[in-house]
Amino acid sequence: MSFPWAEQYKPQNPLMQWLDSRLPLPRFVFNAVGAGYPVPRNLNYFWNFGVLSGAALAIQIITGIILAMHYAANGGVAFDSVEHIMRDVNSGWLIRYGHANGASMFFIVVYLHIFRGLFYGSYKAPREMVWLLGLVIFLLMMATAFMGYVLPWGQMSFWGAKVITGLFGAIPLVGEPIQTWLLGGFAPDNAALNRFFSLHYLLPFVIAGVIILHIWALHIPGSSNPTGVEVKTEQDTVPFHPYYTAKDGFGLGVFLIVFAILLFFAPNFLGHPDNYIPANPMSTPAHIVPEWYFWPFYAILRAFTVDFLFIPAKLLGVMAMFASILLLFLLPWLDTSPVRSGHYRPLFRQFFWVLIVDVLILGYCGGAPAAEPYVMISQLAAAYYFAHFLIILPIVSKIEKPAPLPASITDAVLSKQAN
Figure (cartoon, rainbow, N blue to C red):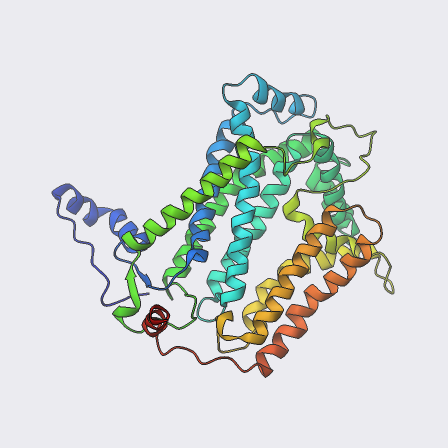
């Protein structure tokens, strides 16, 4: 977004002037994250999670490149190569645990980023493309994380790959050929490991590219803010640097402290002990579960236990699991309220917190055994999840009476200070 009051980049050094005239990269950075980019003056710490996601991705790429130097994508030695990294490579345990727990931290900040967008209506016009590109990043993250979970080639890696790729087999006519094509055979083996390793290495760089598009799309309308009111005057904004670089720096410090606590004191807290057992196709684990960040979707998958007409329960579960994510792409058009922020939508706010509880219940049930009462709870929670977006949200948008909006961002800030 072009702000007439934005500070202009004016290089003083002759070298920088020469560079700016031929490759204006410093100008691009200045206008993207520097003093040349005014942002709303009322952003709170929930706006830190975009930067934290970028930091988490950087950690994953750096540690992943180092791990790739020592990992062997072969079914006969993959598990041993991971143990070699842990035991024999200098600081290999730190790099491996940093990569594994970094994935969890990445998903934590991304989930918080998504729910912040849901509460503050960041998906509404004119920022639909920002939201859609964010969901593309989320899907790429899920694909990358799944393939990374397979690489240690422990029991959960092998059987997780077998179960998840087996979902494609539920698709009529083309399902089994797709499953065989994904695995490079009829069961997870060397071909699957090589494919997953190649894609797991490649996709983070694709994610980085989509993040650039995500930021580009954000800079066209400008950042949203907690009130949902658009910027109107210069008084509504402050330069991104130094005001929000300092705020992001504080958030990054907190993020790294939490990450360090997890890494040094509980590195296996979010993992599964069965993945320290070498993969054995002849021994099925008692309870097969994916990583914790997939549990809500896994619960939706397992919620379907009865065939409906000619559609098998397994296919219904697969369709519902994918639909639970694809549904978010329609959110800008499902929520038709002219008010963005949940702060000024009392009815919406109540249902938002019910949705949070519902997703947490789905996550708990996804990590629990596929038995009662967890299956029944999953069915009820999955039904509410879809009802929230397809029924409740459109109705609330029509009948809700929002609270009065402030005249401007500045008025909202000054009234808060007066109180």
